[in-house]
Image 1 (cartoon, rainbow, N blue to C red):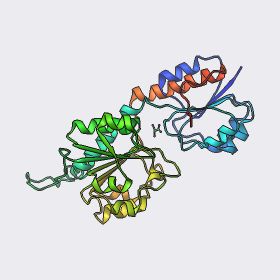
Image 2 (tube, rainbow, N blue to C red):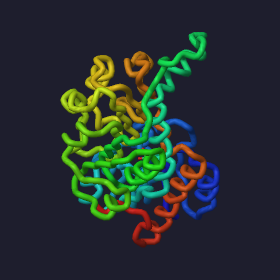
Image 3 (spheres, helix red, strand yellow):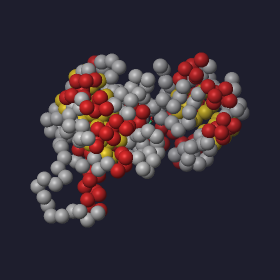
Length: 322
Ligand code: DGY
């Protein structure tokens, strides 16, 4: 009987499906990351692994697994926690969960963009602290979307969904930057492919929707923030590593940009004494962009489907092709 290791308890329907299969299930049945030592111990001899973005998949782990490992399925669309070359050299396919979290992630990106633009954090704090006085014409004024420019960094599935949504709120111009021009997607959102510097200079809202790679690591540093409009809002729902975080703190403190909305940080969880949490013009959420019941069930289910296919020596239905 094949052995399948799952590093976390899955959402209920996917968990039930997992438990109904005829394989030996080894699972870290807790709502917290499987300790590395435990993972290294338990992976020995398994045929398939379902992991999360909190598990590092590298040579050490694959060596510990042994040569029978047939596939790795991550319950995420991002796979910067996986050493793809380590898998490739062992000819182990990598399954992931594209598409299904596009809507949930785009929705939350819009929420953060609007929240930061309309100074929601300051408003909530003021209301809760009794600082809400009589109605005042200039109090807590933010910026709106009509006739503004949106800059999308990474016009993939999520970037496109964000652009469509924000256009419905009045964004009049979309510019985007990434590894290459996305002609069809660009047409669909009416977006112009521009240089990174032009995107920074022209955008009223910058949303980061790209993968974390060696090319995007700390792409947003002090230099980048200093090229943005002082009224700009910066939103990151991709990966914390794309931002030089101390530089973002400086940019927000010095007024290089007006505000930020972050669903991802470095590290995660963000320590309570981190300055980003104290800044009134920065909203931080705990990496919940894909956190809808529907999306998380579907993500987990895709992992199960990947495992079933891989164990039957079939191509994974949702696999990384790079
Ligand atoms: C992913 O899947 O990569 C997201 O960051 C978490 O849903």
